[in-house]
Length: 250
Image (cartoon, rainbow, N blue to C red; front, top):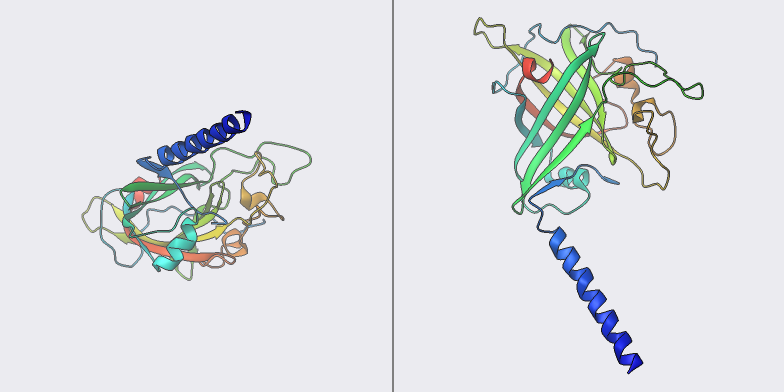
């Protein structure tokens, strides 16, 4: 009888675990992104001066995002295989934290198998706390996120992260709307870099671009030194156009 009761308890425990797993799969919204997938001297500039280029004008800070391939999108997502993702969008919401450094978040969203997934990457706001044992004390958390001139073109590069990895947002052109209202729209790309799998704890005091070694180091010399809009150490995820600069960079 004791053996029978033990087997019954094991069976009931197994059924309970199955129920928990099934319940979790019924979520309608899932936060998902990537999981296992400085000495700059450039002068920041205003984002509103027009440049050249083309793009669909939306008037908002959310536009269609076009992945370079579904294979790359799968690698970026990492937590689950993609079936047929649709309505893939990017949202950029940043504000001037001071000294023309733009902090906030970038969100990449898509729908797959009836579920809406949102990967939100943040730059942090405010400044780094001061600790004698750490570098980059009192720097803006968004220190490397600013507009600058490159080869006569106004561009932007900035780093954002979540707990799984980091992305670099790049703006390669600013287009004046020509409506006499001073509105401008931008085109750009997103590059990603997954953190390596590690049991190490991420620092609560520094974003990954202020970490100089280890699994959570996401630094890019091209972004830090502003000598290219293609970040070294990152992989291109996709492109977008028609983002309203006044809504995305406030």
